[in-house]
Length: 166
Image (tube, rainbow, N blue to C red; front, side, top):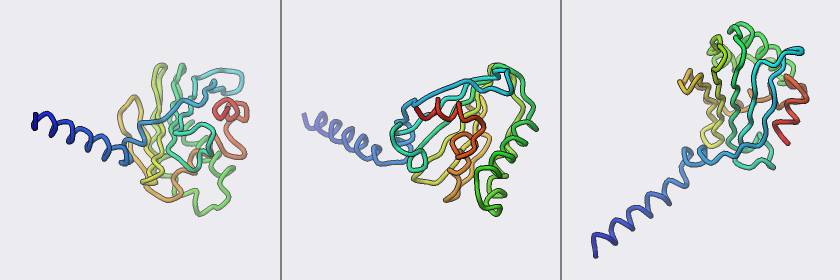
């Protein structure tokens, strides 16, 4: 009887303790929207946006974007687009260089590949993975601003932004 009570108490303590850790918060994301990734008139994949609360601003919570590709895309295309869109959406030039470590991680993709970009608000950490293999991360108070590429005032695609956030 005492052993059963101890197991219940320990299990309850672990569950309650973990509910406050950043990992648990990062795991409780909801899919908020998705849409096609279009380059010109050609669909090259799909993008999906996840957040803790879909009705809350993306800048104040844990978020994630998944990009699944149906076409081969060279790494230079990702790097060039990211650099251009960050300059267009982030006002201060000094901040642009902050994102180089993440942008430099891009690799070429083939049909079927999945990029995942995650941001943990509590730790201010931006992570990039390709096919569930971590490529690296950036820890900085402004790291979340990288999502301006897709969610900023002049995003990659205004239509995609609307589909992701609605």
